[in-house]
Image: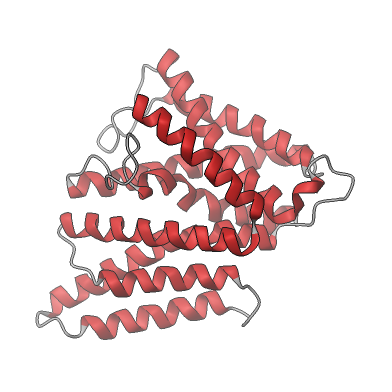
Length: 275
């Protein structure tokens, strides 16, 4: 617990400083995090018995992030780059003498790259969200920082609410074959905490607070699904953590797993119904 507290005391302020700087610094930070998470994902896939091409998969994941950092260069560039990446991975898999091994390599490498590449939606959210009105309480943050802060606090509040409520009231558990510690009480507590925090951030960003009734729960459920997805991967690999990078917290993937699902879900909601 002391290790976890010490690591959090260092990492959280560092992350907030990166967010405050925004722009290029934020894009570089997301790229570095994606690189570290990709290394862990391909190691877990290998341990789970899935052959991969880690170097090529990592490059594909980083390409998706770089594309998100400079939106609008080519319309539909994200889909185009993904298609090119899938093509290149397939060609590289041709070198496997057993076609079954080649197919498995193609599928696992593409999955690993696009899985961690979803972190790019952190950047896409900042670029795609509606402008913050000048009269909004958080207008000084700017659009990019304000909406990414909403995403960060939504995920963190879910984790905190689920932990506190689950620890106090948790009895009935769900999906124990993936993660034995998840409880229905924790799920409800996390959803409630996320909805409240998202509502406060929406007010700060000058947006109608009623969006929190929908955005809060779906952001919370996406964060929980992201955590469970990584747990499933670790279970398949027979690993407790994704890596030893952060003392008391595991690997980088352990820290960003919820964001991998929450970021695209929040971005879709904001682009479709708020912007």
